[in-house]
Length: 254
Image 1 (tube, rainbow, N blue to C red):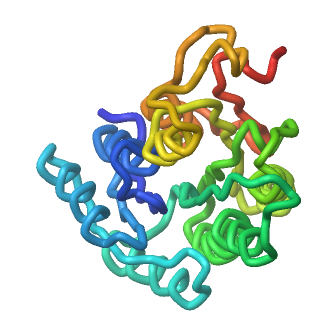
Image 2: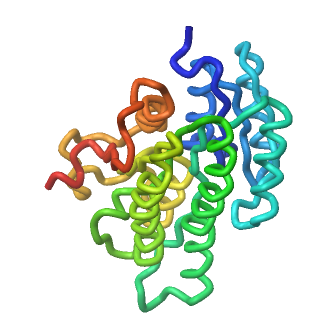
């Protein structure tokens, strides 16, 4: 029996390959969850869902702009009509515009807040309503090490991810009476399409792990994050809420 057998999950931002959402969706599906994979890129989300089904799991894909409030309501309604409930919500979708504060435009800043933070608020708001009907559930919000410490060119990104960190704690406090847990995961340097784009923007093909001062000396893989999310999605973590899990190879320990 899988670690989340019988549970129903929504994973946002599940199209990008390699990506945290896609790998998380595949991991949850492999461990027995029925998964609703969402992304603005429906074709990519469907590829992820199809891979889950090909491995013998249950999954559907839905197009989603995570900043759209009514679409959140539709996603959750379809999840319940298809699978009967909602147990797990993984708020993964996000973007990064890496510019200094002086170079950031208001539009740059607001877009990152909308996609990275407002979307988490909306997902938690409507997810909690449904989970309360179920008798509980678990929410995992993707933050970042940039939500814990200051990093150059990450002004808007850090503001959004720091907001996710603290919103997570509020949701944990408010949701506890309804058996709703909420935790945040803070990835370090993980090799995803987003990381590859950031590195390419610096004129390199691989991150400089020495320059970034990563004690383990290597870049993480999406599976490193997905495994943490799996734990937080499972009953193994049923006494864990309001916590922040830093998965960064020791980067923020320095």
